[in-house]
Amino acid sequence: MDFNLTEEHLMIRDAARDFAQNELLPGVIERDEKQEFPNELVRKMGELGFMGVMVDPKYGGSGMDTISYVLIMEELSKIDASASVMVSVNNSLVCYGLEAYGTEEQKQKYLTKLATGEEIGAFCLSEPEAGSDATSQATTAEDKGDYYLLNGTKNWITNGGRAGVYLVIAQTDRSKGHRGINAFIVEKGMEGFHIGPKEDKLGIRGSDTHTLQFNDVKVPKENRIGEDGFGFKFAMKTLSGGRIGIAAQALGIASGAYELALKYSKERKAFGTEICNHQAIAFKLADMYTDISAARHLIMEAACDKDAGRDYTRTGAMAKLYASKVAMEHTVEAVQIHGGNGFVKEYHVERLMRDAKITQIYEGTSEIQKIVISRSLIKE
Image (cartoon, rainbow, N blue to C red; front, side, top):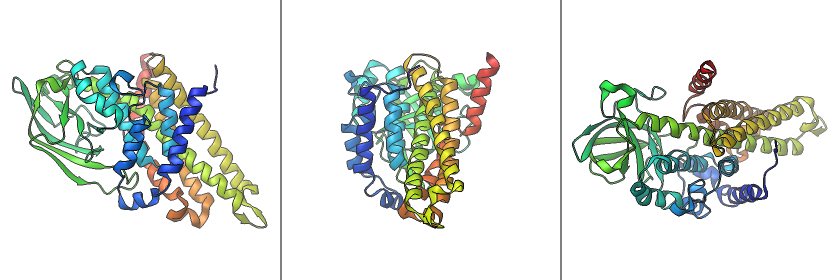
């Protein structure tokens, strides 16, 4: 086993780190307060290849591997998780789903714009009564011959207001259960498609999160992804890869908090010495670094499984479960190390603590990850 990154991977990591430090860091507190993320920074991420990291270059992507994607996600998330979640959804859920399961016509029409950042994608699965229970889709798509009539509501949709392309999961035949679910490509501006108010969130406040409503939206038959009834399998396959991205986001949040805490502990003095010299603080730093390193190894294992064509369902779930736990626990510790300063926005760690919580919830809650992991063990 070789745990060293290649020269190419180091260059990719450094490019992402430079962008995060030079472009994302200035204004990150203001963006959190105003709940907005500027289009200019999205455009720059597209130019750097961050919006289509793993997409084949023939469709406008960067053609990189999953390890590269993980490195980019970690570096962006250290500074601004609102930026990284846009990258995660566009890459893991939308671009991957279209490239892996879309028709050539769908790829040429949609993927080429998504991979370059010309358009941003959104993945629409969650509903008011169908969060973790993804089989209970209330959104319906009635087959009308040459088109489907889409009706329903989707909640908590990342990129909901700014996306141009939406992958929508809907029930076509309820009698078939999960085999009656389909996935559709919906474009912003289609008649009957309405974007609700922006959510006022605890964390990742710069990320654009909305409720979407579909009222008799006519979706052309050619916009269905895969064969009839493939929608649920499509959603589960894409979410498995998405978990690696969110695990990397959680890793970045935890790692960013650790770096700030370490730096602060070397500067802040108490009882005649820097607080890093006090065992109470030194042991916190030791635990943070150890847990972050363990999370990184789990994520890299899942990324390697994906790149090698192995089943990454379990390793991806393990990576997300553990990395999100580490992010939540150690952003709290980073605030503690900062003391009173950790409770004010200027020192960044309070925002990282708020951002960390969502990694235990979206793209499968921690409880769902335990179901995925335990089922895979029992089947062996």
